Structures are given as structure tokens and as C-alpha cells.
Image 1: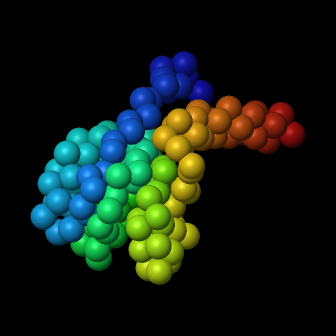
Image 2: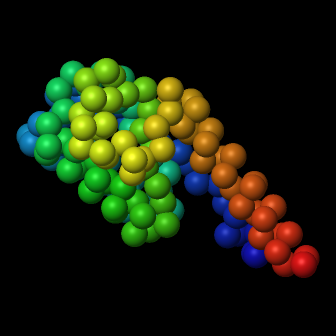
Image 3: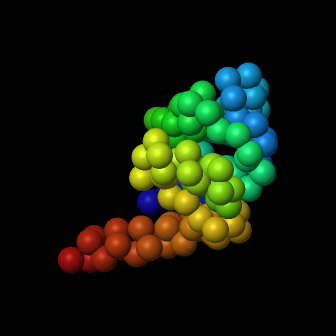
Length: 127
């Protein structure tokens, strides 16, 4: 692996607005889209302020992760409010995301993945 391919990519943390209905979901997606179109995006969505999450909001979350995965990236959720947690569970969307207690844990999970992946790759090359 060339050294220039091992650049560390920033983990972007974005706080989701209190209301995530169709209008707010579109606005929020417009704000995060530049981060999702980067190479291997690493995005954490902080759901701590969410008071209202409807189907448009859930769809936007799924659209975010789909866009990130197209570019070998990921979207993780952090600090879901009780309301967000219920909606994610009822829609079974919670199964599609890694969900962390806070944004710091979610952001750290990106960096902890990389060394383990490299270690496994090195072990398989040595075998």
C-alpha cells in the first residue's frame, strides 16, 4: 500500500435538527451532501436534539448511508433522543446503523476500525 493512500480522513459530526420532517430533512441533506460525496466519507449524525422524526426523516437517514456506502464510507448515529430511538426501533432502521451513546464514541469507532483492518490485512499477507 502506498503511503499517500493512508491519509487520515476527517470524521464529520453533524447535529440533526429537532424536527426531521420532509422540509427539514431536505434542508439537512443539502447541508451534509458535500461530506457524503467525498472519498470514503465518515459521518456521525448526532440525534440528541431530535424531538420529531417522521418517515421523511428516516428516509433521509437511509439516503445518507446509501450515498456514503457508494463511496466506501459510512454513517453512524450518536446520542439518539428517546423519540428518535423509538422511531428507529419501530421502523427497524436501528439495525442498519451503528448507534453510539455519544458523538465522541462514534467518531473514535472510525479510527479504531482502520488499525484492525490493516493488522488483518498484514496477517493475511504474511500467511
